[in-house]
Length: 357
Image (cartoon, rainbow, N blue to C red; front, side):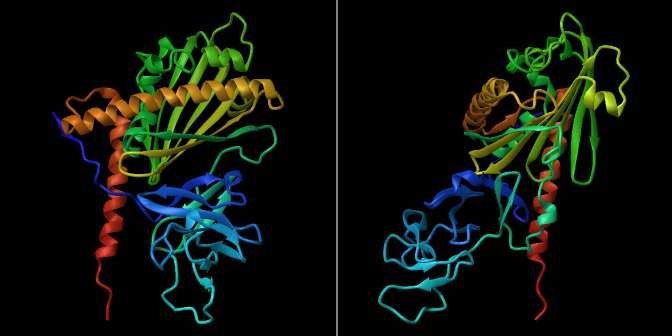
């Protein structure tokens, strides 16, 4: 039952993708590759972030090698200046600006501290931005600014993030729990995503659980739900309560610990991925020392994912295969990839519809 590897399926483009943390965009332009396209991010005089293709229309010099000056982004080669709409607003020594002196501009939104780019041709709709549970609400601590560069196709990343079984073995020093290895996973699908979830009952808390709250010598019930939302957002919802406690909404939210761990995957190329993350918790909200330890633990966990995903990428390219057999835990990852395939196919079909003259 061999499945061939294919890194040329393309991307779903009529969506928002995380491009940077807003704090990254200061006085100097920032270059980034998004969905295989080179983009430059910069702050305009009013503080609003602009995003243009990273090519001056004159001789294709990267605009990211220029500077923020003269009311826009100034090309470092011949001094042409562009605003956030991509219009050329100045050419040294030349009063008339050719209509072709334009750079493609990308719609930009700022939310949750992230800069989001709309990469498609359709109208940008901020209602389609991912929703982050608990963000901006009282009682929640936010750990953000998380970023890693992963050396794998974003589909490999999604397979990993929708696979609860791997945590027992790959992340045994952080979020793994040996008691979970034989517990089946339930899967539920919606129009925009899916979740894979299970309850792990009457087990010792994980190392990270114990750092989060002192459960003493007691045992816990642990709900772990892995969510996927099109086109490339994943989050894990973890609720840990003392074993036997009623599983009411109030107890799940306040009877123990609750976390939402978000990952926003942005394909850089067909073989690399921007991995942005933020983490919300309802406990130890004002504990900077705990923040530092939690950040280190999360970075370790995500780097373990990176090492494994990049190794899988190498083997898939070497062999031309994605996998040679299937096991029960593959259900959610396969469903997620099929949803992406259908979304890309629908976008491509709509682009192929002839426009009436």
